[in-house]
Image (spheres, one colour):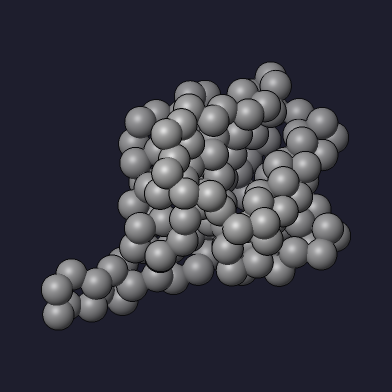
Length: 137
């Protein structure tokens, strides 16, 4: 798992958030070891959600989050792929390469949704540990 985005973090996340993250990583490993790379994001999302729920997590899918800009509230702002236990934002991908834009997108989602931890998970990799990126804001 890539931790490069958490280096220098000045605060510690609470244990419940860390536990949710550990369960999510375990679920991603299970899905990837069963299916491997090469499928669509929708397939991975359905299987990942199933694995998370089987581990006792609450999973909200396609969560609408308004963007607030001053006194302007934009309801069509953005949509989180998944929100686990109302604590950890998950952005799923099935792409050849994670781009800086994907990381920037998750960082923005975390800030706008007022969450501290996000996992960017790319299932289209030979080893899933190389496809999991942890981002703390």
